[in-house]
Amino acid sequence: MTHAVVLGAGIAGLLAARVLADAFDEVTVVERDETVASGPRRGVPQGGHLHGLLDGGRQLLEELYPGVVDELAAAGAPSVEPLRDTRWYIHGRRLAGDTSGMRSVLATRPFLEAALRARALALRGVTLRHATATGLIEQGVDAVDGVVLRDGSLPADLVVDASGRSSRLPTWLARLGHPTPQEQRADVDLGYATRLYRRLPGTAFSGVTVSTVPRFRGGGCVAVEGDRWLVTLAGMLGDHPPTDPAGFAAWAATLPAPDIAAVIADAEPLDDPLPYRFRGSRWRRYDQMRLPTGIIALGDAVCSLNPLYAQGMTLAAQQVRILRTQLTGSTAVDPRAFHRATARVCAAAWGVATRSDLAMPEVDGRRPVWTRLLDDYVRRVQLAAHHDPVVARAFMRVANLTDPPSALLAPRLMVRAVAHGSR
Image (cartoon, rainbow, N blue to C red; front, side, top):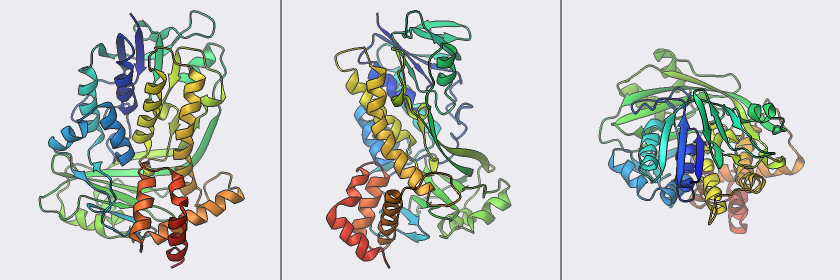
């Protein structure tokens, strides 16, 4: 009997369980939190805040769990087309256009997790075990054979660390005498505050996103299941929104677009503002080291990005797709080959996020000449998107990880960006 263990029952872990179930006789998902259907888990401090399932991630979810997006929509999660049903503001102005060719599902993180968890546990051989992992079992030379739990141990042919940003894998590797990964960081000191409001029928739009790029306070307001508005306000570099009700509303009124403040002014609040703080993006470079066999990592355990860009769930799904490819016809995964392959998708998402953050001089990081030239061009694309629906659509498809960043360098798009991006 072959056995795989997944550490973490979040989005990355539940997607990983899906592909592992095709290759292994048994899959055990180890999660320290008791699952709570009505609210965020303790181990997911950002779980109560705005989450965006980008179009690229939606497509991968459908690939792994066919029909799950329609299930979410049928259960009350609004299904929308970006630009047509939602309003996007960058540099203080709304993007042009009314079509994007994409689809998004607006839902809270617990709602999405519950749907994926039900799907995963319905798979043959997949079980959920509530326990805390404390280390790795290494019986042979450079070979992980399972995990140590607080209440025992769990042998495994493959361990997948999907435990998120707080992953203890580097500590466990060091304890066994293995090297630990180098880290890339981009600190932004982001602060969130989130509040739920009752949403009445008949609203002309399903969501508003006010970007913080650059210098502006920002936020998002989206329709979610249960006829509610989920409103998240955000500020970087220590300029964080308050968590008292009056301060929350006053902060919303300072945004460079009035839409969110207008929703708050007329809607009934359902709870008090909830805070969250994110220090900065982190990329653990497992692709640059030699891991023992039997252990891999994915999701935020590897690459945790500024949540303002909503890339986390989609990036995790992209890594799981690579895992499925490497498991075709086998239960053996080469950790080095896997992490080198996932590094390519991490690099693309890291570039999008950190280039936006580095537009602020206060954010530490290298700014080579070629990146400064690229940043200037991307800024022209964003400004052109205010006037040109073709540019707006192309920019949104890249931002949603539907198209690669290189799509913005298509000659016809460059002409439009240069022509309109100087206005």
